[in-house]
Image (tube, rainbow, N blue to C red):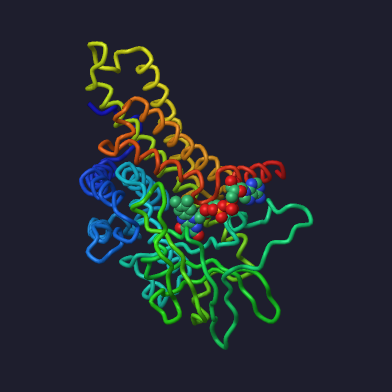
Length: 399
Ligand SMILES: Cc1cc2nc3c(=O)[nH]c(=O)nc-3n(C[C@H](O)[C@H](O)[C@H](O)COP(=O)(O)OP(=O)(O)OC[C@H]3O[C@@H](n4cnc5c(N)ncnc54)[C@H](O)[C@@H]3O)c2cc1C
């Protein structure tokens, strides 16, 4: 028996979407994620990989479609429901599908019909931000964590003015999600012209001449999520592909981080719930001492602690996501609080779940060790939790 959902305010339509997303998560994402997890990073992205079927089915279901008739709040509620459920199934695949929406979302925000047509939702996309020499520094958009007197090294990837457009040269880090398979990018990079030295955001078709890729990154968790370097060698983009100019970069970058961290909160609340559900089921069927292990006091207490952490994370993630996607003033501090809390919770709950599985917990025959690996790397993803905490703390100190 699943634990009843304490979220009682979902409409009939929202419940139906939740059901569809949950079925897709359970029947497609969970098994595909487990299969991809066992492959090498190269095999996972080879032609014919189940990874591409997942993307195709995700699009077929219309889970990423934007309905112009919905209010911002209704849109945010729908996407929160879908993200939580998909991440419950497999968070790496959920993120692979979700981050593909980044370039089309920016195209929509630009209001430019040409960009909307050139950067459609049916292509795999990425957020190309971090660089070999700019990881935590990239996330620190206002340079709040730069030590007094220190200077940051030059960006590894720079767009320069070239007539009516830009030429992009340099590289992005091995951590760009979908990096070696993406067909289009929301590229956040350095910007130079005769008067300006700063940063900008560009929409880039990655099938353009001059783009090449590194090897897909081998890593311990979220292995179904492809990651890898992207290299740019004088790649030309037209002028209107700069969607955030240097003077608006700090604000635009912080808005992106606010959305990204709010999404991470929802996703990893879903991961925490997945670990809890598996542990609860297992504890009711595994017999030791002559009774199901959940009847032993310490297991019962552990299960309750997990439950309370999961529901606290879900509540914070949901409130933050709705406030930041549909509220009047998106708040980066709240987004960071949600990301840090939910990723930390996912890791703690997955670790507790593994303990409940005993020896089976550490076996690859059971799903829990993968969820723990997936949760572990989330504490680095979209900003290390401690550096995000410093950014949020310095904002609180300044208020
Ligand atoms: C699963 C996953 C998905 C990702 N997806 C993307 C993506 O789609 N696009 C993208 O662009 N990037 C992506 N990243 C990159 C991610 O944003 C960076 O890994 C992260 O910001 C940390 O940067 P770094 O790895 O270079 O670590 P570093 O910045 O080198 O940090 C190393 C250590 O030093 C600490 N540290 C660094 N600076 C400070 C400071 N000022 N004060 C105190 N401590 C500090 C950090 O907390 C950390 O413990 C992803 C990463 C992961 C793991």
